[in-house]
Image (cartoon, rainbow, N blue to C red):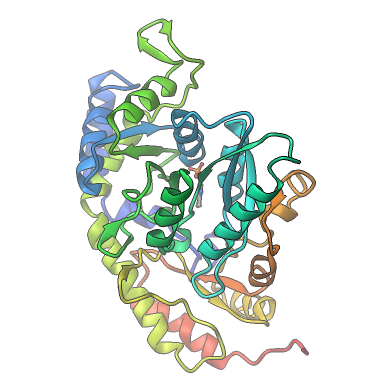
Length: 386
Ligand SMILES: *Cc1c(COP(=O)(O)O)cnc(C)c1O
C-alpha cells in the first residue's frame, strides 16, 4: 500500500478524497454534536445499514474481529464449543472464535471459488460424530462461512447442512458487503453476521469499525448488551460483556460512504470485467463469478504457479499487489499446534496460498492504471524455472 507505487494495491485516501466535502461536513457535525460515543450518528447509521441489507437490526462495534467475537457470544458459543470455519481467511476469523472461548475446526476450500467446501463441512461433521465418545467432550455448535474476496460461499448447501445438524450459522461478511447469491444478500443467510469497516473494505471507515447484523430480535438485544459491559440498564451488568463500540465520528463518515456503496461496488465489478477481458489469454487462473451470484470484488485474485515472479515483476514496474493470505491460519506460529483440522486435510488451502495474487482494485482506480497492469502482465516473461 506504499504511496511510492504508480498503481498501489489499495488506496483508502482516494476513497476519502472522492467524498471529501461531505465527509468533512459530517465530521464537523459529529464534533459539534458533542456526544462522541453511542449517540445519534451511530443510531442513524445502524438503522441505515440494517435497511440497506434488509435485516431487522444492526449493531455498530469497534472492528470486524470484535463483530465476529460478539456475534459468537450472542449465540451462546464459548468454552467447550467447536466452530467449523476455513484456514484460508484473515487470521481474525479464527482469532474471534478463540476469543469467544471456542475451538476452531478448520476445513478445506473449494478449489474454484476458494471458499468453504460444503462437502468438507459434511466430512468434518461425520468425523466428529464418529469420534464423539472418545473426544474431550467438545460440542459442535456452529459454522462460520467466510465470503472471501467478495464472493459468497455456497450458502444454499451450508444452510442445508446447518439445518440438518442443528448448527448455528455466523457469516463473516468482512469482505462481502454487497455480495449476493441466489438472490439473497450475504449477511442474511445465517442466524447472525459480522462486518468490518476497516479502511480498505468495500465500506471503509477512516479508522476502525464493524457491525453485527441479525433478523433475530433476541440476538440483537443480546449483542447490544454484550457490546457495552453487558448493560441492559446503565451500570447494571446482566452479562459479562465486552466494550466494543462504533464511535460517532466513524458512524458519521460511514453514513456518507454508505450512500455511494452500490455505485462503488458497480465500479469494482467494472474493474473486474476490464481485468478479466484483458487477461483472458494470459497464463493465469482468473476469478470466476457464477451466474446466480453478485460478486462484490473486494479483491480481484488471480492464480499462477509463478506468483512470486509475477509479483516481483509488477513491483519493479511500480504496481503494488497483495497476497490474501500468504500463510493459512493453521500454519501460523500462534495457531499451528492447537487448531483442529477437518477430515481430508487442507490440501487446496496449502496449494492455493502459493498461487494467489490480489491485483489493485478500488473504486477510484482509473482505466488507464488498469491498462498499465494488464499490459505489464501481457508482457511478463517469467524468470523462474519450474
Ligand atoms: C478484515 C477482516 C476481518 C477483521 O476485521 P477487522 O476490522 O480488521 O477486525 C475478519 N474477517 C475477514 C475475512 C476480514 O477480511
